[in-house]
Length: 233
Image (tube, rainbow, N blue to C red; front, side, top):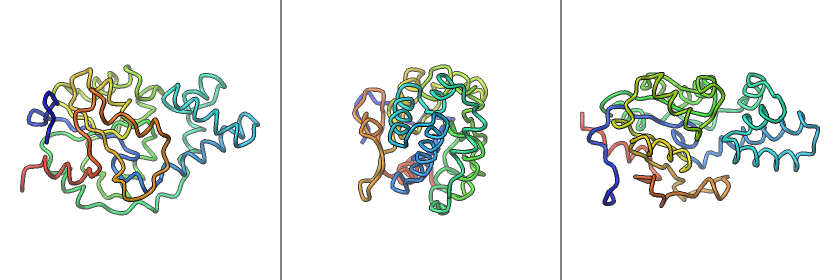
């Protein structure tokens, strides 16, 4: 049941989705592979032990929105080299999800992806899930001019690039902090959380925020949630 004062979906004409840990279950821990490669990249670039690299990685992630942005700002790393390395992972844990695809297809209006990852990584994820054809476009970290969510200018660039009216859009995300600006802009916000049935590899702060004022809805079952919003065929 929707809480009093929370925004609904009757007016929504554009549906915006994050990619990692949103369009596939948290418990696949696919991002853990990326996480390990980020640590290795930082360790190699800065010539520090893995333990120190991990500390730096998480510090930059929290302060800059992505470790990449921190490495670019403080150490002159080139985005192309970084993205190619950290996204060279095994995508095979992802399986086709026709039920989600059907629910997305039945949503009225446009569907877009807004991710801090790369278009190449997004393409592989969407191909494995079998849902890529439901989306009009992917707005990635390159389109964002290397400024990741939750930077306000990133959302502005996205809205301008794709002509999205935030007052008639909904945003689905797995990090509550990435919903702050969308909510301020007028979007209906949905936080996608782990379903609790299996272990997930996340930091405590990444799992916070489900009670935040800028979070309109929380779900641990995105397919089921979307199915309730979709008109019957």
